[in-house]
Image 1 (cartoon, rainbow, N blue to C red):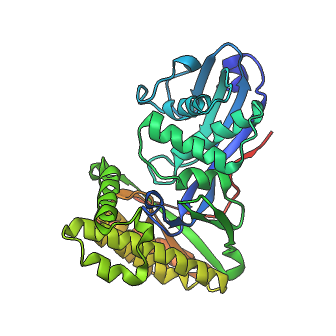
Image 2 (image 1 turned 30 degrees about the vertical axis):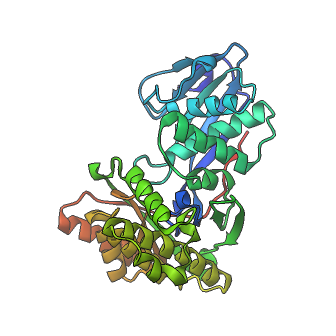
Length: 376
């Protein structure tokens, strides 16, 4: 149903916020480290109008269930487990920050694949935050909106995510990857014009999500915090890569040791990628991606058979490099390919999945796209 059919009038405006893939720097955000996401062309779209009576009405065109009606002054963290918790959490977070949100009618739709590790939830949060920021003239910038959206997911929904997904959705620009320092939230737009180099970045959605991933994020966060405490640093970003071997020798728990090795080395891989892109050597990023996957698989222990098979078969088919992206245990991988090898690489991956008895993966091009914006 359209906004007009649901709510009886036209919306005051229409906004969009994208999903993302992360080029490099995985699980580093909550360790106050570095990440390099880019926005996808896939977006969550919100049509929104203000209300002055304290009522919040939410509708998703993608999920059966009709209109969810809530009162803004009765929103409580950790009480809603449906999709509506994400936009409702944004309203709660804005009000908690002192912003006078007096209600809204919101119609949401999304082309961001759910369950694929592409930040469909962050897109919902950010598009809601941007729309309310514009309509209520709150004066928040893109980084402010990302912080609000993260607080909604952390405190209201109850997911202890870092800041990367929301910042990517809110702040990315077309044709760039976003370098983000997750400690001070400083950002830099890094040119990432793959087409000019005769390259493509493919996303391979494995279409699986293993139950092993339940609670794994929080477990790894706790392990990383334990490692930082043992090493006497505020966060693992404070362990220099050059001192990694010495630091690992001070850790008795082999699991924590693996977590620390991954975080410190992945921060280093972000720095390597910055250097390569600055020198115009986009192809040189390929081996860095594959190295990053091995670290996620062997040290952080968040890969799975399907993701490993994507990386193995893509590289065997002629890719420059590949790795899982996102939280792991399913979801998606990214593959850097020459234009000329795209079909061969896609065929290699698809045939490998068929031979293994897996469902056919979804493969599409990740074009570095614009962050959240108003459409109408």
